[in-house]
Image 1 (spheres, chains in turn blue, green):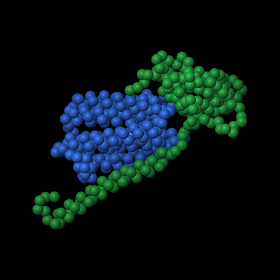
Image 2 (cartoon, one colour):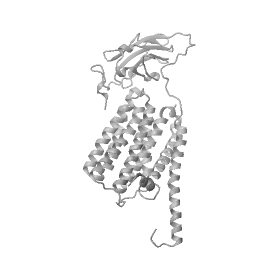
Image 3 (tube, rainbow over the protein chains, first blue to last red):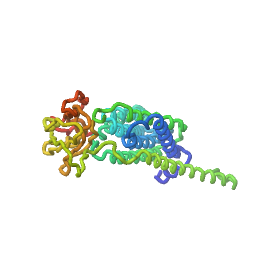
Image 4 (cartoon, each protein chain N blue to C red):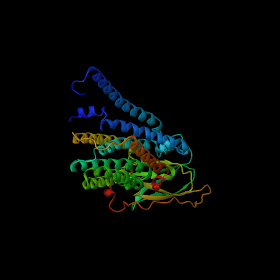
Length: 227
Length: 178
């Protein structure tokens, strides 16, 4: 099971073949939803793009790299304890950190942390349960830590290249999730797919996450420091 | 493809394989195009807030100057009363500004700046009267200053203060790390 085999599998019709498609569907859905909200409501907000454009853009990109991993895990359903803990930890951590960071940058540490923890713990549990209670615990703890860390990092870097830090954090997280995709591919050698999500799964989650993030970032509560 | 398949079956399989490769490549290219288009609209260059230097070199008008330092975990401005619409120039006393107190936010006037030995000046125009907050970017060091209205009188407006943040007054900000 080499990387070459994985790369080849990405172009086929199997579980791994759906990863690129999921990224595409998620991106198209999220930006379409954002465009609709923009023409209905957000265009009347002063300085919308300079204020929120960067963080919304990267938040949407983050969901587009998180959702393929979620779909890949759901396709196989069951993993060994070690793999399941790794899956719960990675997805919980990244899906907590990234939203926490981008919301923290616009709404402050409290709201960033709470949002990050909510998303991180939810996805951590959802994916960690593939190996039972150990994965669930690991996912929960990673989501909790990732969310808090995301919000805190954004505020600590508030006056110190925050946007550049956002780009770096996103790139590193993408590589980590790509590594997870490869790990799942290796761990599921010879295992049949047990569940197939259609594109509606990706569309629904992209819509929910984009609307939640946009609402919180633009119209939601924020700390006094960022009002 | 099954062993012993005829030339027709082999042709279809090859064709299907070609279509699959093209599909995944299309998705990849499509994703990149979507990112580029969205990025073009969303990543507009420009800052929503002034960076804390608003007085240009040719400005000959009145400027209100004050010293900014930290004492007992709070920002101290001397003087702390200013007139409305006249630019304020704060000179940060770096000797008395530990840790994150150098990262200053005055949200009411859109000021976000880190002061350093090479640039310890913060400039902004107070275009509103009232009592306003000055805080470090982590909201640990806090202080207030007053902007008097055009008649030189104090306004009733007091900017709400976030008092929930931890204080750095005892033992510094060392506990902020993850």
